[in-house]
Length: 281
Image 1 (spheres, one colour):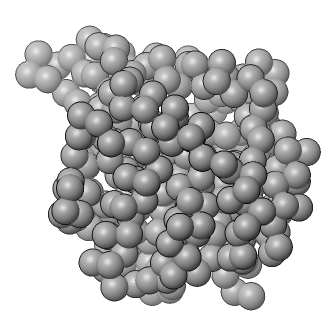
Image 2 (image 1 turned 30 degrees about the horizontal axis):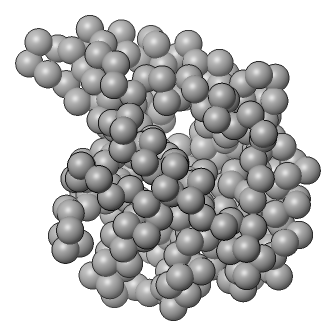
């Protein structure tokens, strides 16, 4: 597999993405709230890149993409993706999103239906666990912090309660998560104020039940109901099924792991199998 790091000018920012040049149909991969394009490296290692061509995007403010001072609504995120698909000349595309990226996929299907062929939604639903804001605290808490070294940062990461195992495919994700300074100190790339805007004006700023009920694109919801934090899943199975039943054409698949670890190990292998089966129909 050949992976190329590429940039494009969307007209408002420079957007970075990873182009994994597989032989199959194109999958556009959209990561979670504070993540980056390498969030899907576990899926690539599990065989996704051998079956499909994948474009994994650094959403604005993350990874190597530009960080405008403001502009993190769903509308602005979607404009970047529409510009990318226009440049690639691949619309309609299969959109595969995890968490925030899945909500972005739903937004694209609602507002730019000509750009979306099918939707693959990983751990995103009309209603998440009622304590989601508090449950995301450890993941958001790392933002804005300075660490003495990458090793110190990684040690802190590994103490997160949701990281129930370590997979070597996680390393590239966390390497892309930080800026390193001449003295060796590191700070996460994503800025707290940008991510708060993405939550308040993005995740919480859209009528998701309405958009989900109106979705007519063939969809697959992949759910990992393992314990994330507070002895609960971020997306419990019953809430995932509630969303599946809202849509005209949506399948449900449950995989191993929790909201974070589903992208690695056994969860990743199960996700690749589910995606392959969904797209072969």
